[in-house]
Image 1 (cartoon, chains in turn brown, cyan):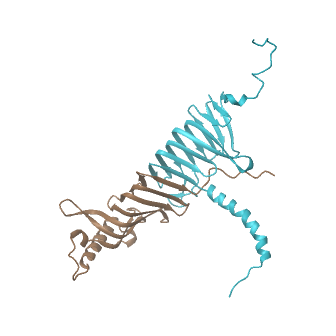
Image 2: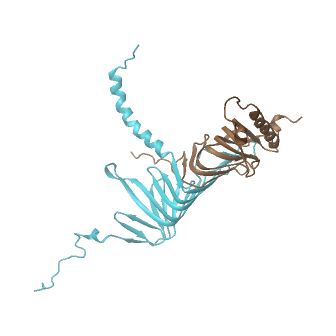
Length: 169
Length: 194
């Protein structure tokens, strides 16, 4: 039996879908309005960790306050595509130390391609060197660790262009 | 229970705090570089940033660059015993600004004032090793006292805050700079017109 550390992402995805089914089964009943299909599948405190297929180390961790599977035009669910609220996406370096953290109030996540994107605002930061990024409209490519911003990007680097000139006597 | 701080101690420390606080605030302000633009692609792991459209680079108190396109590199070190990269304190390694480049250099002037020197060109490059900024592409500098043009490149040393040029140059001075000078307004012994 493979250790949980070396579990591949399809295994994690299967676990996630099972969690979705569980959420569906535990939906509140009673006098509440009957939820439609998408609402029924909404998961609170949704999260998934995606690991490197070779090393088994965590590369990305998606978590959110709420997530719903995306429905296709025919009413069916699109596999691995989620609309999430309150996203926190953490990318990890090869030694599993935290690298960038991206936060977005609302965005779409594709756990197969490891992408996330939104037309709305977002912020990103790296604690190690204090780099922070803000903007509106982003696309994150989790495989290449590439962040594309389409509007009003602001980046703050905690550094200076030159060393201070010594004070003259 | 209240704690009373001796007023003599306050009197001693207050001037010291008043001296240090603005310096600390200024230092904190200078310890950051702000980049803004309409669009960008950031290679987070490689530390390569590409920004375009209405790009502004600001090093508070030092300089401000506006341009059409900017490529910046923040070096990444190899993690010990790992294949991946790790950030190296956010230190900016290089910066290439291109397209309608305008650089505003802020230099301390007399009586606490700030002098602004504006430089224009097609491309500016910054390298962290030499800590210099090289402006090329028909560069010119505009100051309150004149314009310097016709040189191949302008090199601004960020450490010493000095500017030098490469190649020949021409300086254009405003006409009124000679106002009051007798250089072109000397007395003559020619007969006065009647």
